Image (cartoon, rainbow, N blue to C red; front, side, top):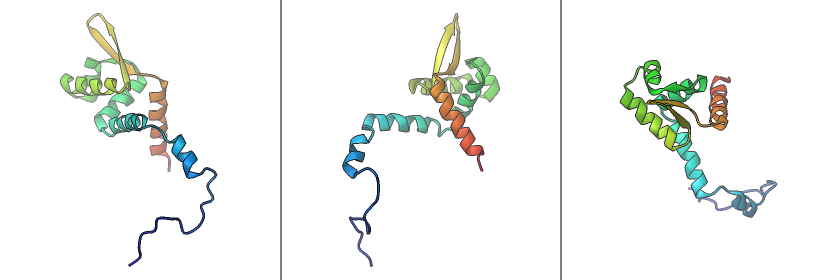
Length: 119
């Protein structure tokens, strides 16, 4: 049985040394925030909501019709996405309209869609 090795068999030829890579490593809070965003994208219902809002801003009622879901379930998912700053809301009278928070969310989503379609 071979023992696990603590070192590479050969000298690595990387351009940055371990110390430099450690200095450039993202913070724990940034890593956790990014993981939360990807976790949000791990739910098919939330993905459908994001995809729908990519097309246009909609109120909760219209989202329930598109997704064929109850208003409570859609509102719950929108609240989750809003807390992560993936979607934002705009109130007009009693009606609340939802849209994607900014173009970064749109770009991430479109890039992932293109990746999924790429063969």
